[in-house]
Length: 82
Image (cartoon, rainbow, N blue to C red):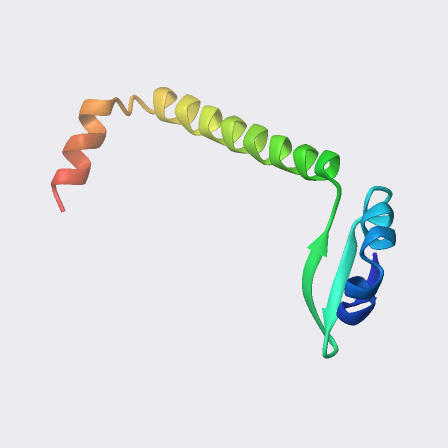
């Protein structure tokens, strides 16, 4: 992933924004990575992918709970008996 110094990013913002449409850019300040600049399209792909993974995980857990006969009532009992 390409890195850009913070001062360079400030001085050349238009070019940096255009570059971010092609690939994510790491913004560095004082030798440390401080941010990542990426296109909205790339961000949306990441966001949608994360939501999809979460829903898949939720569905997997629900299937496992159902297979183990863990109903909402039984779960409430277990949680209230601490």
